[in-house]
Length: 92
Image 1 (cartoon, rainbow, N blue to C red):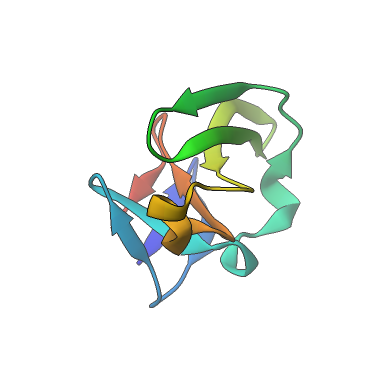
Image 2: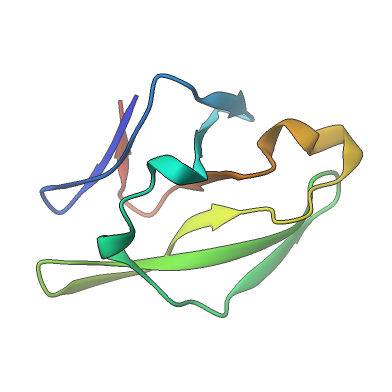
C-alpha cells in the first residue's frame, strides 16, 4: 500500500491493518520529511484519543491529514504504532 499527497509518497508498506476502511501503516513507514506539528485531537468511543500530524509537501500544507492513537484502547490494540490518512491523501 502507498499513501501519496501532492506528488509525494508519504508512506509505503506491505504491512497495513485495516480498521473501519482505513489502512493503518506502520509509523516507521512514514516519511518524516513531510510531517509537521498539529495539536489537533479527537476522541473515538472505542479506539480512544486520536492525535494528528499535518503534512507539508512542496510548500503546501495539509492540516491534520495524518492521525494515530498513541494509547489505543484494548479493543484497538492492533493499531498502536500505526498511522492513517485522510484529507485528500490517496491510499492505494
